[in-house]
Image (tube, rainbow, N blue to C red; front, top):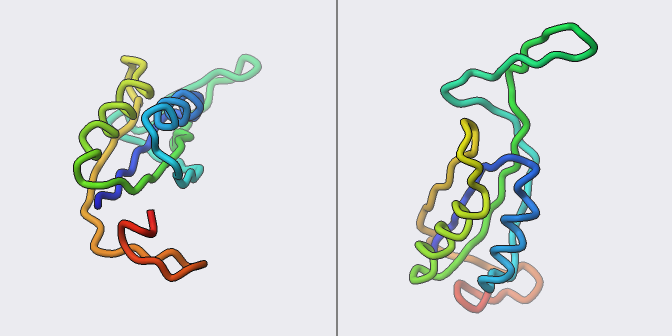
Length: 112
């Protein structure tokens, strides 16, 4: 099993969620996040005053999938989240050793 974590722009969350649902992903965790990459934030103008945005708002989503599905799920996320502009986000994949469903005590694949 693999844990796929993606950090994307907030306005792309619904596109990513819909794409994952179409692919067959049945569950995900979504967290609001803030951060910056190479651009170190950006400047915006509000009511004529310019100000620095140091931490850009993002959304972090996490899904656990079987090993064989991980490459396809990453591809689905990237295609749905991509705008072609700086700050589109990142996706990373890490191995999962074990999963336990708290309610039933099911383990690993059965817990998905």
